Length: 330
Image: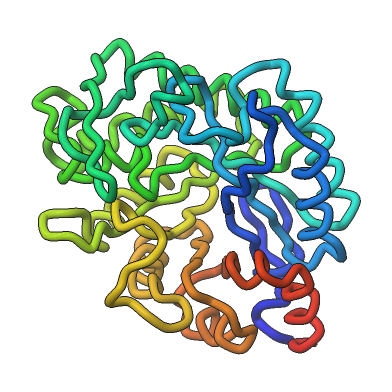
């Protein structure tokens, strides 16, 4: 049997194959972040046939001051639960499992949308746009951890199978993780353990909110690919701590460089990092990045670069890609 078609256990979640549709922003929500019919139709089409075993819903804001853009999906209010439950139902009826990605944009929040001053670990420029925001106090950091927990509770109540914490692409948790954007002198800055202190506090808060058995995934911007930024060695060490804290799966992507790097090309261009993380942890590792060919996905699994393969742009362009890939490998 094809490696891509093998089942996999992720915490308490049973996945029927190794193919994942990763989170991709659609801007199809209502202006208030509520579920729209257009968004339901989009995920109905992408999950039709249930070929990706897991669909991770696009990044969703946990509170208004962390909203990245107009028409971003919301998990910030209990009034969101009813709409989110419809989304989970649509995906489940098509045969896929679903997780929801939670995010605070930090310095990348859009002040024109939020009506508030953006917040960040440090008042320094954040690539790629070079935005500068106000430095968070320690009390505000604790409030953000609580906001992640409340949003995660809503995700569980809405019927999702897992929740994913977004620490990539230059958003708030990634800003804490990278020494390029975290210049703090307190317990949340400096060495790696201090820079992931907020992650560990968020994980603990979320775990308390969702209980012992609900899977928590973490998307890590594993390398910045910038001078003085995070490295794969940092990520291997950080992911060992995330596993100890109770994370069920690590989802590898880019850091401050976002989801592509000019000098990295080919199928699975973050695979050297995902392999380093996979060798450091015992929980499953998901790899995304430029994967457009089923056989390439198969080879990455055979080479033990990752345990799961995320295919984003190819599925975005062709909703039948996953179904056709599964057929081709059967």
